[in-house]
Image (cartoon, rainbow, N blue to C red):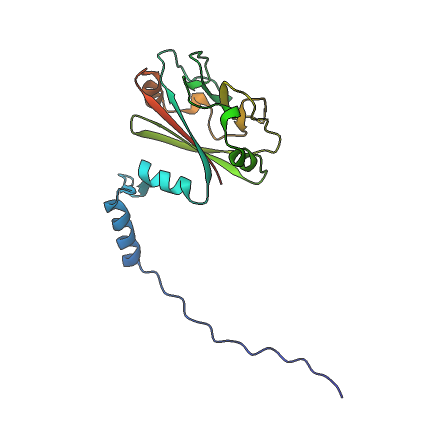
Length: 195
């Protein structure tokens, strides 16, 4: 007896709901009312600081660092951004008297940041202004420096490096934003989120 192949019966496909422009408009309006986004002059919706914070915490292991401004900050280094626990300032420094350094990170964050296929999302806030950018994680990270944290635009890794091949170095930061970092009364919040 010869066996023949039969196609399995196909289940009827269920129609997917159509997303209409009106539905999108209502969703954007709701997010805007909740302070999550705003409509910019350029005709696009932009996440607010609150909106970015929500985005950064969705399936993200994160660490928050609090630092302070210093009048000596120039942020002119072309290869890295750095935070320090002390008051020492060089051309890469964007914050002093930080409450954490690499050695202080929780073990789950250290494991996550050493995952090669992950990105590090960085959000820096000062005086209600925010800059966000990303960099790459690496299994070669040491994360043992007890005084500093650096995000490198190059692939250089040392004891203080938390990410490499960053979108930004200190010199890439908006100069008006850097002025806020120079204010010794400025509280600088840096959120590092592994995605």
